[in-house]
Length: 372
Image 1 (cartoon, rainbow, N blue to C red):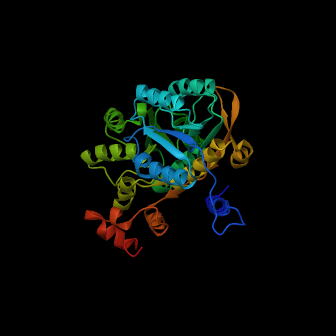
Image 2: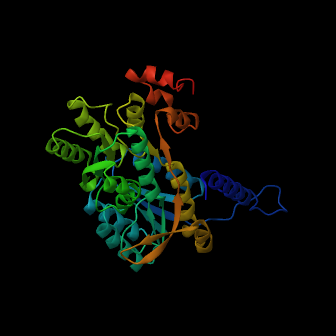
Image 3: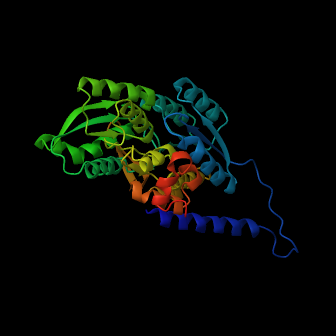
């Protein structure tokens, strides 16, 4: 389902909701009287952290909160701060509060599964949001086509490299405990493995980074680079945070802007790096559409409309550990280069003032970004 169609459905359903609320009174009376309502259904949402990406607090939280409030659903939303123990404690409190549905972005498969088992025992449906709990029991998943994201990163890198036979590539991948990271790598390999096998490109090393830790990612990259006598022609960085860490190392080596680096998430920092020329590409995943889809799914489940929820989850994602298909909403992504950053401004995804501050005024003028 494309994002434009999804937005039209959201608007239509919102209009229907408004009509139903305004029409609840007795037609024979001069003014409508709303029926007495019980407590609002509660949806529990656990966001993962504040450090691996700014999106969780800057985008997901306000978008989800707005959608739930509009639908007269009470959001109970907390951030696990990257802490497994806190993740479990928050989930316990949400289960105690008898939320109608629990939506989680797991820090690990083990942590996610432990929470899902407790939720199942309490008859609370679970939605895996953005990340899948491998071996888990979630009824639904909402996220992006992660294999395609990895393919976009690889395509972007090859385009930035141009015709450079035997170019040496370092891969800085995401957390091995995050199935999305595995799928990103799978997508990259689907494009790059044949290049490595033929010798068209040379893989120096592919390095996963625990917990998506940017500082650790920079340290690991620097070690790999030093072990390779300081030689690198391109870097596959799994997201903008890791790309920023890589670029920090390249700056110390006087290589920033000379070595193409990929990213993901189209963060403000990532987009600024693209405009500056330090980062070659990022991948834009429309968080607005993801949050919108997840909210609609959670609202349907919270209201007991499981048929409606199933109608929304038009795709399936295979869990190779549990050996089952999870009912899913899978969204597409877009490769962003310097000459396409402007599209995110014109669509209202990012403000030009955020992008163009400081040293980037000239780069923004060249891309006609300040003109909006």
